[in-house]
Amino acid sequence: KAGVTQTPRYLIKTRGQQVTLSCSPISGHRSVSWYQQTPGQGLQFLFEYFSETQRNKGNFPGRFSGRQFSNSRSEMNVSTLELGDSALYLCASGVGTGADTQYFGPGTRLTVL
Amino acid sequence: AQKVTQAQTEISVVEKEDVTLDCVYETRDTTYYLFWYKQPPSGELVFLIRRNSFDEQNEISGRYSWNFQKSTSSFNFTITASQVVDSAVYFCALTGGTDKLIFGTGTRLQVFP
Image (cartoon, rainbow over all chains, first blue to last red; front, side, top):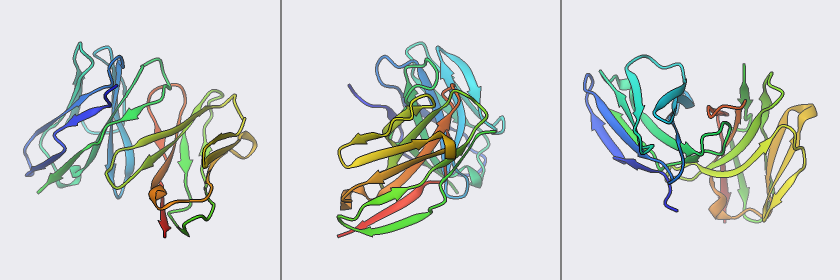
């Protein structure tokens, strides 16, 4: 089975712009979660989607949003980028029955200049 | 609130040494799940093990073993006869039954030849 894929792998944006990241889960997985990883804050949960519905949300401002499509693929959007949004954004997929093992993609490294 | 503490920021060993990575957790949930992930320099989080709160049996998988002790709220990870390829950052994580993972700050393991 193919693993979790994320596109693009690298992005460079400037402050004020917006960005959309994409994640394709493992075939058959219905849950997609997003995490932000920075040197200062470590790995932090952003949100989780299951069957096109947001099931959990972390403590991030409203500039961070996401959605999930009927094929379980997910996108994450960050509007009005700030320097502090520079991070590795990791997507994980799971079967979706709660507390399942989550399998992570390679991440998208976002740099905001 | 849930919390995971990995007090060891960085560990350096020489190949073939045994090494133990510590993980201490806090949760009020009676049912919870613990995980270990490995993050090599490529950035992708690689799943190693999942353990639920009702299963205190230690587990061994090749050179890897895990010691789960509810009495001390610890879930430690031991690598026997370490190899250079084991060099990575290792994360311990906790969830209470949702797909939201709470991660520790990670332990960077460097194995020198």
